[in-house]
Image 1 (cartoon, rainbow, N blue to C red):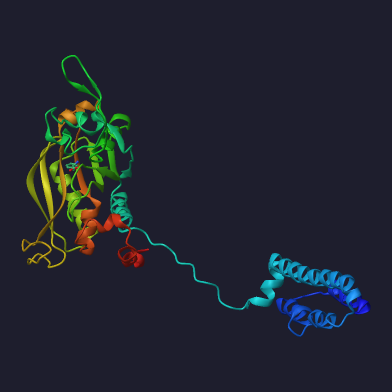
Image 2: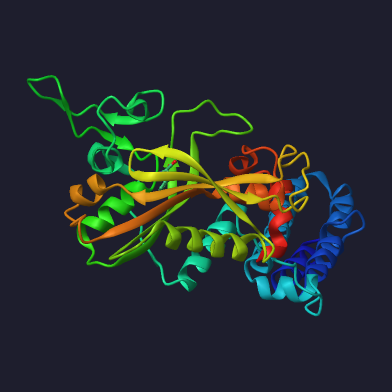
Length: 350
Ligand code: PHE
């Protein structure tokens, strides 16, 4: 018995394994149901009673040593990934494909608009989303009582200081349009100016299929000597043809903005029905795409530009709206919900 235990102990110590299978084989050979250590426990029954204590202890030491050795080999195998990998994986197998994301439809259209105006010689200007009253309203000729300043439209960050006469000074707010960036550009850039200002804007509106409290705009500004309404009309027509195709027509309707005079709303001929009338254009053949106008002299003067010498035009459009027309997206909320089924539809536009 003693010799057998010693021989097996030597065997346990000498066990080596190159693969997981080697370890399993050693376990079965030693500790399995028909393993040599298990067999020794069977023999132990016949050991004379007075030797039981001595051999019992030795056998237990042997069994524990064998189990520990197996465990040690397993751990070593798992830690050296190479050996495990070599045994478990087929290195010639093709890799798992990595799924690439796609650009968001708002980014795609924003880039398209920016690229079109870059071709026309416009620079891109950006500015802060948290703005002051001056850049969003005051410098843009909004009279103090204008409804757009009211809480229902604007998210205020702070109310600003109230002077003795009751007037409020420079509240801090989330910009409601990127015209604020145009003001910043007029304040610091040399003339002539030709910029577009893409960015995110905020309005305190109830969220629905047609309105959201967050959306994106691209606004444009062109200031030089002798800029006329005809220049504006031509720039917008060229833009519409680049964006919606060479057959696109535009029409202008008189409108009002505090910062432009005269002002207009621009419609483009419906690119779905070609102007015949369908449910997208509600039978009119026209789709509204942007607002525009000649920069009000008050706005030029507020930014230190001589309105006798210079004139200019400005325009502004909603990126989501253009994207809706381009792809016939019916519900504005799709743009903000990150539903992959929606986003994947734009995969091809990469
Ligand atoms: N700022 C206007 C808006 O947000 C759009 C606009 C820009 C209109 C420039 C005219 C000229 O609705």
